[in-house]
Length: 108
Image 1: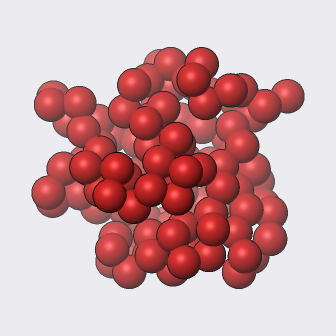
Image 2: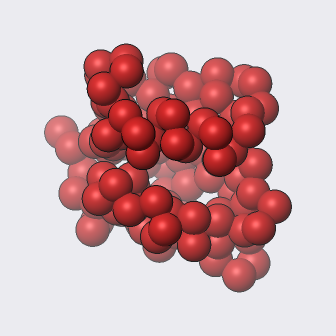
């Protein structure tokens, strides 16, 4: 059963999912610290290049099935035009200012 985005526990993660699903690149980038990093399947990636390819140019969408660790770990069905739908795990590090300093994703 999908968790509605508005009901996700962590405000930064909730805003991240909302920005992905609204295809709002500007709002997405505002959620990240200036030095934010990310990894995909255990390998660090160039954040700007990755989000453009995997989220924004390919119409990425997250349907969250489960959250843990205070809402900072998600199990979700992620879909985009490149890969179709897959089960994924997302984990987030949120800085003191409430912005995301790192996220890690990969197949679940």
